[in-house]
Length: 444
Ligand code: DOR
Image (cartoon, rainbow, N blue to C red; front, side, top):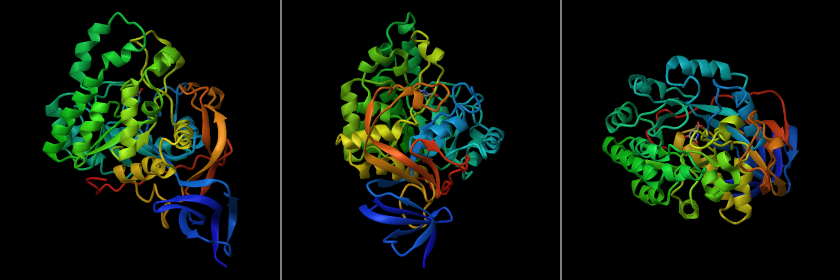
């Protein structure tokens, strides 16, 4: 009799070629068989009847703040939040304290992370003005998901704002570069206009559409000139989405769950807990983001999980810290959008598993295929549950989505064949490993 370590029985599996009721057999942490495994046995069997089995969902945009302030977030707490929310891998941003911009810092983070992460993890390396000669070697390390460039300033001290230095960064290596795209000169020029403060909604006026659009136009011109692939993170405007359709030869696109789920009414309701960069904008931009999901412009959806202390979020604007928690709520909110008919489950999987794997070159992740890592997000599409702050595992303890009712909920998270979350219970020990990236890829 064929035997496996684990069989997921009878779930509705979201395969790359469509949905199918099937059993999945796992051996040595990888998918060994997909199909009718009635005659096979396994050390562990999980009944998935009535549930959907998705490839493990990836959050390609998290700030786990480690090293930083453990009262806000750490790698152990942020990855626990991830698996509670059905995420099997995260890509962690480099704007920590200190930033991850050198071989030494990367090695420190790699060593520290061992045995502390609940899910698999990829590391971004930050580009700065002084580490450009090191970038080519840093991006070739197999656990590095990408070089990250802040072309406009946000949290932390990473910034490369001028065309000449951006071009040097682009000419420094081969893999796709990830960009925070807001034009720093326009941000600084407009800052004094808002020096007296005011309501939080002014955040979207200061960091206006043109800040983001101008940043993206400049980056696209340089990307075309240098031939260097670009991934524009958290695209927030209708104008950029329209524009980027003409740059598919060099650009891939991320949209955040926040920009698909919140409009500027959030500022009155949430105050500082709605402030992020680039900002939450009006309904026209949200409609454009959904249209870009529908027509394939968007490659990835992320959370931009960016925790701050309550005190920092409650400082009067413009001193309010920018950034929102989100890794734990990403999958429930997207599943709710699926249930509301805003996208199909297979498009959600394309955006949250296959998409990030393709764009970043994650090896053997993002699809339910024989030989791929046995990462699964098992969801109950009928389960309705309200997001509560008491559920949030990040020490900062808040979510901008508190009180939101979601239909569709992750009930189990399995990383390389090991169940790590079942019905809200975190199982085992933190056994996450570095994601392996195909560093030979110039483009995903
Ligand atoms: O709102 C944001 N917060 N946007 C960013 O780009 C950075 C992030 C953070 O690290 O706080």
